[in-house]
Length: 174
Image 1: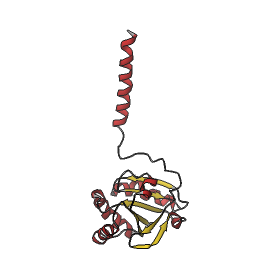
Image 2 (image 1 turned 60 degrees about the vertical axis):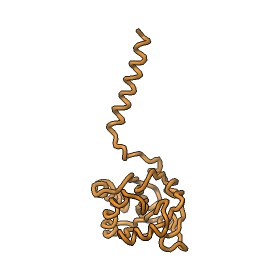
Image 3 (image 1 turned 90 degrees about the vertical axis):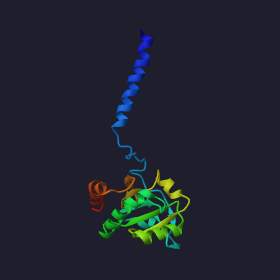
Image 4 (image 1 turned 180 degrees about the vertical axis):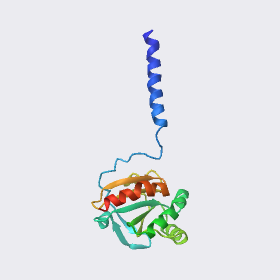
């Protein structure tokens, strides 16, 4: 009798884990970097390869790092939202052109508009890897001390912008 209860108990436990997993949003993967300093980086500016931008240049500012690429379909959905948001000049948006060719990224921004205060090149994807990027687009809200406070996986939507990102920006800018 006890031998038949063991498989039944294991099945019940697995069923509970499955039920819990089905209630979660698969796009909300918690980042281990939330609450920790942003990874150190220095990267060439996309349209001025002789110039560099580093995370240290952003200290003292609340800023948004947005990973994107010219080959990214979802980035096209997100881009008009970023272009419109950039007009408000609420905070600097830094674009991280992820695993892309510089010329392709420059053409893409010329065609669709440039919401970035600065766009930097991450040709080999090392900066993205350090930030824990699963795929583009992803965005990171970073506070004045250089601490990551929020990670948006996937495109920024009007809802995510108004309900999550903007309230947090206002709080961080106090």
